[in-house]
Length: 441
Figure 1 (tube, rainbow, N blue to C red):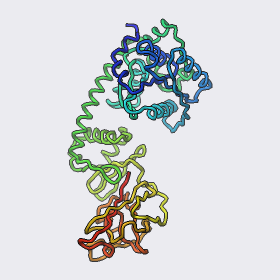
Figure 2: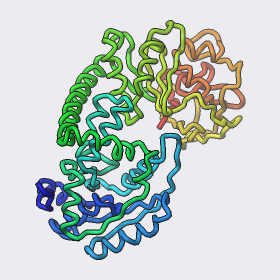
Figure 3: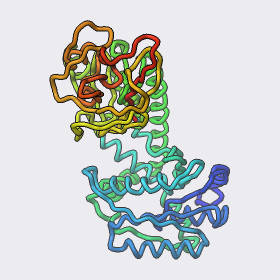
Figure 4: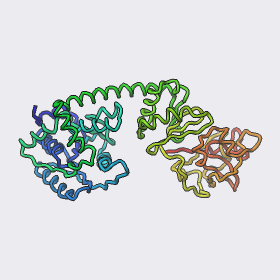
């Protein structure tokens, strides 16, 4: 059935309810058809085109002018943004995509909608590409028709239509569109699939878009079931927030079979908007980190995320906590105000009765960090000990020990973060004290 603007009718309620409706507009066939059809269906005032200049082609400026002319002819307003694409090792296509989506995310406010013109052939390429990269059900589910994006939502209303159907509409309407010369470059994986692989598949299985879409839908259902199971397993392992990151109890996790452990790890990272571990990382966690000796401190990291084991718990850390911060020798802190430390953690105080430092509100103290050999007698203990020994007794995670702010009064160690107050500086029962709080963002 040929594509027509009426086929977009199911999406009209969502488009009409959006605060602002944007359309990612490259000027190519797909986005131009979508823009033209929406104007015919809803009017030019219903949509704002967004053109991203990636600066990757000598024709980029001409494309920008073409897009502006098309929007002017349709009466559609257009937002333009120029980005610098930096290839960080994942390929130029992925770098351009990340730059483009970053602009979309910044643009969208709550209740806003971003329309993208991906079609059925794009979905086939996506599924094949991910299949050849070894993706599981989540990846093989392909591109979702709708998902959240920044503070708004992304919608792909053309996923059910092939490029041939869109081109038939474009020719019937006399539309002109941009042909990006990079689409002919077979060094790009997606171009190779489009030019060399898909035509062979189409010759054997002409209905391949529907077949792939069906398989993608089944993978999506399997992924949803896996998410439901992982959410139940996350409850069973007693997740709790930590100063940095989150932790779960190892013992109940170890009762799960290996496939559920891997499923839980991926879900756990995804719940906190962190990059999910790939299958090699998951294998390393399951077969090296989890079975490690009880006295070991194993670590597995990927994409700025860490998993570490300590005191029968598994920690998910969203930053490189081992990176040495440039710590000053001393900081001056007026305790009536918040103090932001070099690692972005903060110190602040609360007035409490019977606990804390014997200190007048608003007093000025010195804040230092460990250099080695510091000793303290925590309140309620008879003798002093080194901070190294006290941290072990307290059970403070090893990756936090070099970060703990040490509070000094008149050259003497008076408190160690919010962990304890040194005995000679603590208030007596019934006295008003200043309690220190040490928090991470």
